[in-house]
Image (cartoon, rainbow, N blue to C red):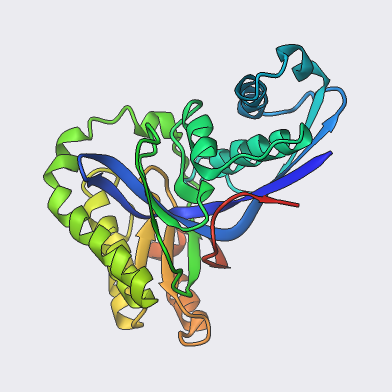
Length: 288
């Protein structure tokens, strides 16, 4: 038996055309998918991608494919699906690490990332540090040492968007036209981690979120930006290929009750009926 868990993400801190291709830096939060691998019969309700990952791992370690029908996958997660919260990445990454451990092997982060990308575009939550990652090819992963302490008031929309549907959008021209702005955002992310500055990280996220409005606009965005400025929050980030938005703050410094009261305004409440106060955390898959 082996257990592993991987965090969800509140969208991305930044995402766009950076250093020659579309890349992202995910925003890992303290909301997890936990996967348990045991010997046994497969569950009838298992998600297809987690079984596909078991098969990928068996092939990677050159183990017989005939082992797969005798592996049971128990995936425990309450992460909302198809909202830009890296629910699928959390499932398959935890599955990969737990399956490897079940057979006595250990995956490094780069190999884990490649295995995940072979199944679908992958969030950089698979890395311990905040990481600039080519989520389509896994060809780039540049880690930023340091993690500014920050809370996130995650605004959950009822709207859903599958990752594959987002990738069908005609976005290349918009992404490339915004490359200069995203390069600046990436520089801010690096400075934020170097100087342990949540304010700089918030600036980077807000810049990237504003660019994302040209491609996948979030309702009430200007009102949320105004709220950030009026309440002196660090910034806001979005799911660039989903529907959630995060207000970046410090629960000890900022008045979360007042912010929530402002979000109760009918124009915002209709778009963001659910809220979750979470912490940004270190990424990576942890064995348990």
